[in-house]
Amino acid sequence: MKPTMDIIEDHHVVLPELVEDVLKASFVEAADQEGRGTIDCQDVVKVVRRALGISIGAHDRDKIRRKAEILAGRGQLSVNAFITIMADTLTETTQWGNLKTDVSGYVGIDTLQEQIRKKVLKKGFEFNIIVVGRSGLGKSTLINTLFKASVSRRTCVKHEGDGDSQYKIPKTTEVKSVSHVLEEKGVRLRLTVTDTPGFGDHINNENCWQPILEYINQQYDKYLKEEQSIARKKYIPDTRVHCCLYFIPPTGHSLTALDAEFMKRLDKIVNIVPVIAKADTLTVEERITFKLKIKQELEKNGINIYPLSELEEEPDDVVSNNKIREMIPFAVVGSNVQHQINGRTIYGRKTQWGTVEVENRAHCEFPDLRDMLIRTHMQDLVDVTRLVHYENFRHQKLRSLDHRHHNGGLNGQVMDIENMNESSL
Image (tube, rainbow, N blue to C red; front, side, top):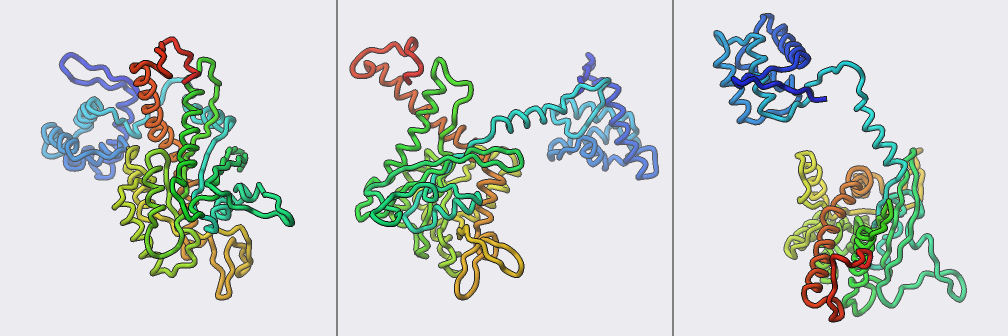
């Protein structure tokens, strides 16, 4: 708990006794290292930083040094002078850092983290992913490899033919979803995988992205209606699409017109993560050149891909996201077939000249994609969907309803939007 400070009328700060004890301990530790009962005036910033456990900006460092020079005697600071400097520093900043003080009696605020963890684990997590790309690029295989389970639509649904079961390409782009509940070490995840069979597989692919765009917007609209319902559910099921994996054929040339047009139309409503499918068909040099061409095409067409820079608040986030941006598009290989290599069991694709290991970073970038989607950025994908894409949809939807209200209402009828049943929105 953060102690309070009493400010006297002459603007001197009186610190709580417990805080002073902590600061004196930091001072004594530094003074003992020097073998004197004082510390050098030039070392005061280092001692302050150590006491607070935070980095100090250049402007604050200069202010601390100036105060130290005023209070120091022959370049040396006494413990009382140090306390005065620390009191002013704590008054001017809210960053108390690692400065800790004991309170009399156990309060128990450290159990908040455990309370939140139990509540979240009980509710579980939701993650919805859509895979888009032409047939034969290994979309189903990659998804199964990501979660090490048969979670793709193709592994769950078959169309019966005249003889053996077979898979048929629909005449137009379809959108089909399948949901699973995965559990690992007590953590439950409801995973929804949406496939788009028929995308880009026809001679005329005009508007083949339209069913996908409509599906994503329908999920936003469904969530918005439930959110604004008068008798809404205690917990609203989240079917909003959190990530779109877009599969690029390993041609080695550049993005096709269809690739660019799809991503331009959907980058404002969903997190797009482009991947180069079946990257083992490219040499290392071809892969590097192809990735560079794709990045240039994305920049040329003004396509915004994940991760977005809008919610980067911490320096660590910027560093982490920049590493991902450097790797996009991920050159991946998927396989749910296990092989024995030198006594190890690995997932890979076996060829006449060797085995491509999907989890070996020297062979492909599948491990980096998996780490981003599952280990490091799954929650961020959910947050960006909620705070950016869904908010944009919500704003446009409500503004459109308000505009229609001011222009005579729906179907030419005047509507009282304030008294209207909110569930009808």
